[in-house]
Length: 136
Length: 90
Image (cartoon, rainbow over all chains, first blue to last red; front, top):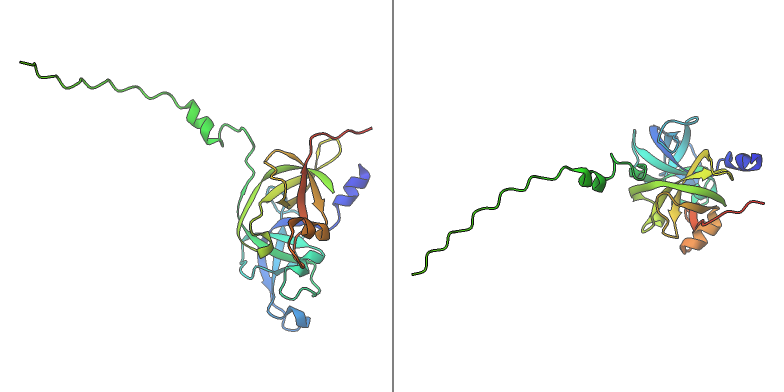
């Protein structure tokens, strides 16, 4: 178990993060020209802040402040950028629209369950049929 | 590779083109006794896993790219490669 816990501590991951700022560097490695850098706050699975903020390159090119993004670390981060052999260890690879992690079978979150527990609508009284004309 | 539990789905429109057409799942890592470690990954889904499933997650870039069948280099890392039926510990 200790071995497994040690393995989980390494900094190789695909994780949620919140963009909390950007970083401007004029002098940088030549292959990084045109790449935006963001200051991101890593989040845990329930999107609460977890750990120290760090700098990630922006591979989407469109992430802005306060946005929920997902970040890839290690060598794959550089693969996300236009020039794939650059010194980068974290990159924003997507902007999260929605995370659906509602618990299963929770009555409050399952629409059909709510639908089933709705009280039955009172049946409107049947309209009296049009009276037939008396045949002659 | 590790055993995880699928906790939910992640929806993203603006993303790297490598992720196009793939489901993204939020997977928490489990200890061998089934308790949660508190670590998680956003994984590409290769086996049509559902929310609540116990899954086998591959967490290595080269193998991930090989599995999703994209040539060249790309930011793939964590991939769900199996739905676990049973784990026997001796």
